Length: 110
Length: 112
Image (cartoon, rainbow over all chains, first blue to last red; front, side, top):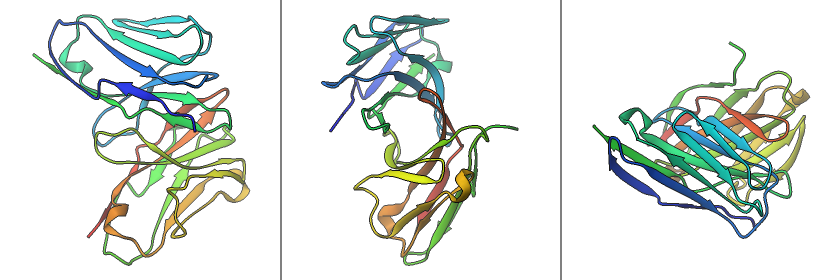
């Protein structure tokens, strides 16, 4: 069974701080996506990474896919209250099934 | 609006009743997924369709749950004899190649 372990599960920081969220697995994924979800809404795609070692930047967010395509990280620089939300990683498994991590709830205090 | 839509957005029902949810995916997407999500957790896979074919079902999907996607367009998820433990957000996602998911707003089910 392919699993994605996401850490930390909860993160509460002050505005302006940096943070990193990790998504790890013992399995190889053909691609991995990061989503952000606000209460009462569906997840919204932030980025898809496909190539091992790939780094993508989205303003203050930096996403990295591990060389072996088993892990990924999301780094946020100078977090703002508007970054508050549930961050989810999702990998494409070997049967076509899409597998989510448990999620990281981020709270950024002004 | 050409995004994914789900209906209803909210459903309150009494234990033992049957409920049905509908998902309308993005028209050109042939893969459609159903997930269940509880507060603060990641979505749990329930089932997915490639066109009209249901390719995989989670062990979470008991005999009370059934999903269909006639003609490979919209999909329905039915829960029979609802239980309080069925209370959750039910999400539908439409997938464009290779694996980018576009989620609907979800249906929040409350079973009293």
